[in-house]
Image (tube, rainbow, N blue to C red; front, side, top):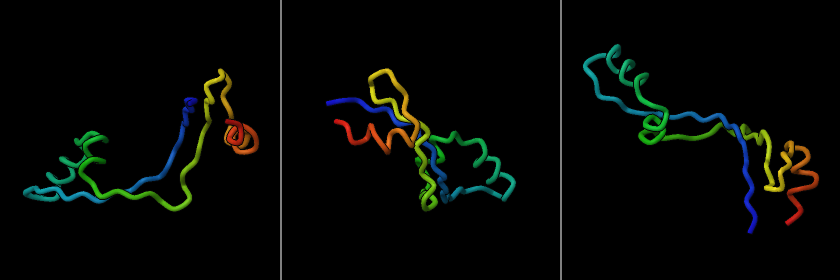
Length: 77
């Protein structure tokens, strides 16, 4: 079995409920959350068709562009 490393990017969005005394406090608490906590406690989704592969490392010491990966390397096992 081979290892493949994908460097990717996607647009995500989420919804989270925060209990607070007022909107200012709620926003402060929201902004102070780490990304990991925000993702873990939110309902998340991605925008349609926004997933992009930036590059692929096929483990052979050569980085492939998305085009090179799709046209050639993806088919090679």
